Image (spheres, rainbow, N blue to C red):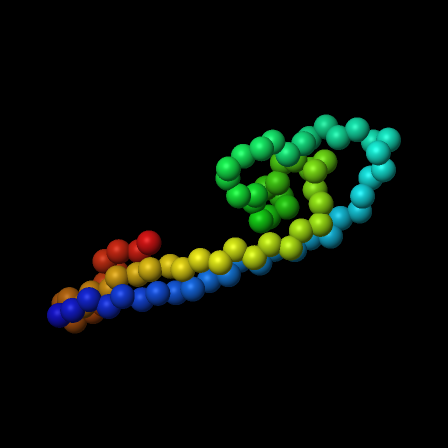
Amino acid sequence: DGLLHVVQPYASPSWMATDELDASFPRIDRLTPSTRPRPLGVGRFSAIDDLEDWTIVRLGARNRLLTRRDGGTHEWLTV
């Protein structure tokens, strides 16, 4: 019967405040350079010695294509 395109914007905010250790404490678990974005959850952040204050907002949009058949709405594609 037709196709409905739904665009759903979203934002994922994350903020954290930490205390600084002085230079006499060596850093063991450091941040390794990567092209992947940092995880927003502190529990998934493995470089705990490189934790610093952060304020991050990730913006995005979900795209859905819906179709109507057999008297109901069905999700055809989600990106």
